[in-house]
Image (cartoon, rainbow, N blue to C red; front, side):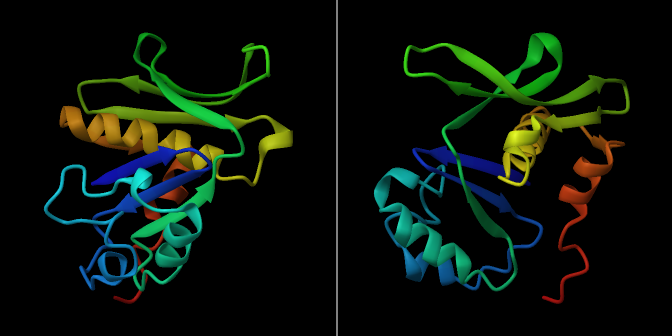
Length: 162
């Protein structure tokens, strides 16, 4: 299971397949990470610095984070994609990236991920992939990553020693 949590200036990724429940997160920021709560991660409960420091100690890489860089992501099911936007001070939104998929009988095929050059290397593409994967998992759909970037994101850490 893949989950993306976003709030303010931080985006947190959780990959349950990597998680070994060593409880470093729960002891590091118990207000943020609480196993009995749904969702179990609540980024509103602690300062970004505390959350970031706690995640940096995750021994399996199940948790990771990036700054949002004032970029929001959302799911656009009508157009089969997740999209990233920046907003100007006057509220004008500009698209800065997208991750496209196609629904088939086999599942959701992620075939393209792209971020504007000035936003590359900021974790936005990973946020877009996670946004799609989370939605597909909630629908019970198989994920078929043919996009090389999406495949790399989903395969990351599978060979990591636990």
